[in-house]
Length: 290
Image (cartoon, rainbow, N blue to C red; front, top):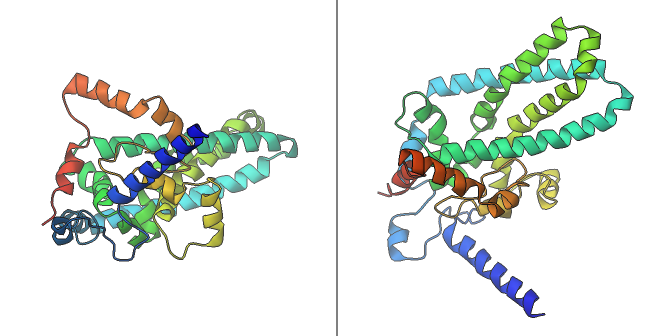
């Protein structure tokens, strides 16, 4: 009885801490403030000066790159899917299910690793990758709801781009290898294809985790059953200084990685070897309130 009461008390403290230190995304006013200073200088949201500066760095060139990647990836996905259906054998259904599970777990870990790396290291001022690939991560922490105002291309362009080399090689193998070779590698092909699907959809799932109004019922059902990233689960990451719960495909790996202190250990190693502290650039942009 005492143990259960203790757990409830700890949970209540944690929930209150999250509420007081993360943006109230289910509140249409787009900002929460607990002091007069914060009312004058918003901690986060679209009126935060740093968020506005970062949003303006989204260029026409970046938009063009994302558009090309989206269409290229979709074409490759459809082509590879047709080849997979053509070579599929009914007795392999267990292989496909197992490949799907492995693919989604791998995608969840990959989402966490990329998310952690982009959140924690390097600067928006870096040539090429700074404004094009790190900028959205900085903007997202000081205006989490900005992702809900992005269209499909801006939301998903970079993730679709990451899968193009894998899908392109898969397409080439289907065209050039014999049926016997395709069958020998079919399990691996299914794993890579489903991994590519999950990686491509990660940021759309991430966007849904920040959307509190108007989601399709099937998306809410998937969130409620933790098949994809739930909204309240991801909110833990958005408590400053954004140092935990980086996995954003399903979030399944967040708890075990947190328990073994996986991210803090990697950060300790990098800081020990280089002297560079994590999230320095992220903190710099968060201070640009006015």
